[in-house]
Image (cartoon, rainbow, N blue to C red):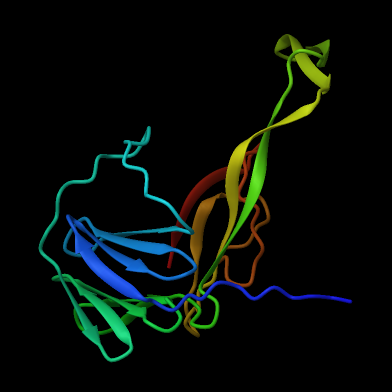
Length: 204
């Protein structure tokens, strides 16, 4: 017999402004909206726990930005900035972005905006690893032929779903070898390899 486990509710139960960020809480997790300028907002999500505050390598330190307001409008929680309006559905937690004139820029799928699946990360044991030295074009190097995997913590597989507009084209994610221009209706594996260069930026 097959059993299906009901997922946690994504309905926004509460929201609050803390410091320079807006926090929206649901049973499924916490959304953090952090405005960084008149038209840029950083969006983060965690299933549980606190957001990391440590500065990440290669990322510019975010400046303090406080010129924004938040309000509840029927079934939407609205974060208003001078040139950007962010609306979060209180029922589904899906996020929409609008410019100052009310034009829709980007929206998550209202039925299923995002999924996070926890998994165990592993590291290779060095105590009993089978290592072989081989010759390559760059000289001799050592490779691991066999090693035990040891649990080393947890991380998440993440999916985010957007509803693209009818004539919207998508570009970015690095340098590709497949020969297509727009990424619309294409499958792209973002990884480094030969002439394939991964850059995790998507432009509409």
